[in-house]
Length: 189
Image (cartoon, rainbow, N blue to C red; front, side):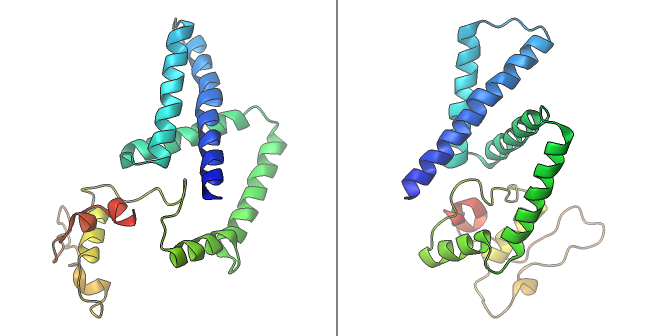
């Protein structure tokens, strides 16, 4: 069943990047009067589509993964710009209602998916939870210090020193112990 879901999601990402992204790329080339032959266009389009599918569904750098996810949003927004205004507003309203039900409802699909994933001790598939803190950023250092804390009874407040006023970056009191603690994405795998 999971193979079917992954195949369907992979196909959708490939067609979104390959077909819709190719149409957007073609219109940009025509708009800015950039000459490009057919083979170069197909080569670039297929590389972006295959690279996006590999980067999103397999192991890829977080910056590239987030870049592809932003590209998905741009392509979908561009495609929605061809619909009448009332259609876009109706879709936005339905999406907002579904999102509220999916996230906040005690029996919503997102809560059920998280519960099943925790029971099976599996990583959440697909495009969920892909916006982790970047390596070297202040949130990353705080998360790495909290993850390396070995004392369960101490709580998160004692594992990270509070940032001082005027300091350029917060200083954690505990250093990361393992490679998994240094990279939150690696520990989720």
